[in-house]
Length: 155
Image (cartoon, rainbow, N blue to C red; front, side, top):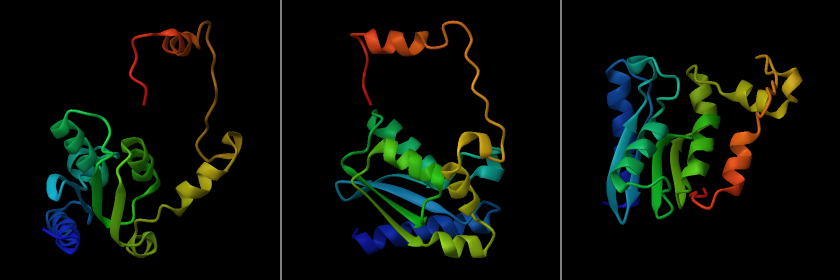
């Protein structure tokens, strides 16, 4: 299966999702020229706001490969990833991401993430959702434990 076929597969998944009351998004993870996982938008089906196609595909790929990074994999997605998915993609560290529709095209049908980009750029105290730091005694103990541990897996 070539690169175009991989993108066609991601778009097919998105189309199937759109036809079955899901969001119009699909994604696959490819390793060594074969599809190892697929994901579709299941936000409303599962009542999970993080169940975007890319997240679903990343979770399935990591489970299949039994590891938390996808350094030798590529992601094909039917649409340019949103801010949340971009974060997950960077944590997963794939080799590349290929997308079909743009975030502008997604915004034109009601999936507009521009406000999230704008909120991230604001200082915490100016964001529309209240975010308050609270520091109980020993709040930093987990960080100190991690820092001093000889038995940790860095990521």
